Image 1 (cartoon, one colour):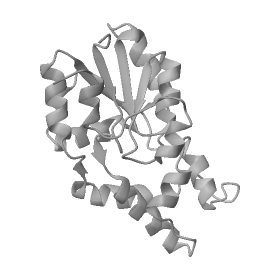
Image 2 (cartoon, helix red, strand yellow):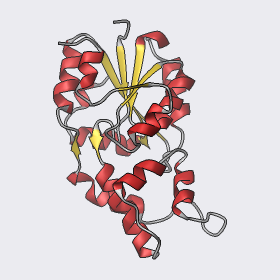
Image 3 (tube, rainbow, N blue to C red):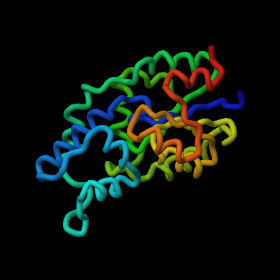
Length: 212
């Protein structure tokens, strides 16, 4: 296996927070008497930049600024109710024990991301935890490109694992391969439309990396 370093997305990939994001956006939509989303409809429209996803929900940013209030507050208040995806810790441990190194690359704000990863007691699995400098989920491409320019690894030795079409875009800008998981914020059909490798589960990463 040519890969030496694994770059993980956070939300939806390692952290099982889809349900919380659906609840949080419905909290905002309900407060405005706007149509609510289901998990299925959410996964059919969620995208980056996040402002475009909000437009699909019916928000008009010619009439109000982005980001809209309510979502982040709701999410942060309920965050401790989120768990990692099943077997995430075991998988991270096995990957490290097999000689790979690992990092996290997220569209979450850097300070919040570090706190969230530490809360789940998995910081020790990662060489670096890389987020962005805002709470608008904006700048992941730039963060990824900056990270790889300063990385000791060659692009061909890096695999990025994520759960959104945007992760495919980020990997492309970084010049690295990507594997996508249909366990988070975007439906399997939409992920397959990228042409990237789509694996069925988090646990299937081990087989993909040829780890027993």
